[in-house]
Each structure stands twice: as C-alpha cells, then as structure tokens.
Image (cartoon, rainbow, N blue to C red):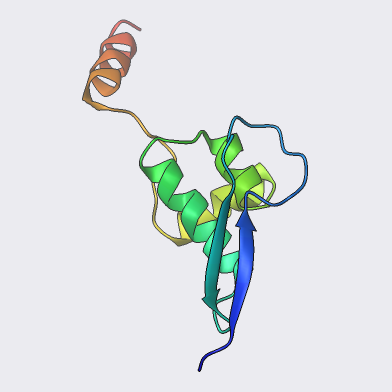
Length: 95
C-alpha cells in the first residue's frame, strides 16, 4: 500500500484573501506539496477564479515569484474576457 500525506489548502495560517473553505487532500508521498499548491493556484488564476495576489498567496509565493511561475508554465498574466479586451482596444485607439 502506498504511503500518503495530507496537505491543507490554503495553509493553516492567516492569509489576506477571501478563500473561506479549506481543502484537505490526501496524496501519494511522491507528490510535492509546494508543486500541488502552485499548480492549483495557477489553474484557479487561469480560470479567473482568483486574483493574481490571491493566487500567489495560495501558492505561498510573493507576487513576483508567482508571475515567474506563470511565465514558466506559459500562462498569460492578462486574464481579460472578450468584452474587456474590446474595451481596452477602444481605449488604446482613443489615444
């Protein structure tokens, strides 16, 4: 039988965002806790469910290091939907 470890997301310490639920996950020991947190934070940021700052906190990284992780994983830091993009283009055209 494989050994498992449990991680708590977000970590059991004060953080400054609005995640109200804690998730407890049991994973095989070969999974690195740090990598799981970064992967989850990255996906939640990609889906627009968390802000950049919230995602960085969930990943337990400073914003600058989380931005580097997003770049390494080829995730855009600009999370605009189609309407936001059109609005930005219109605003840029007005200059």
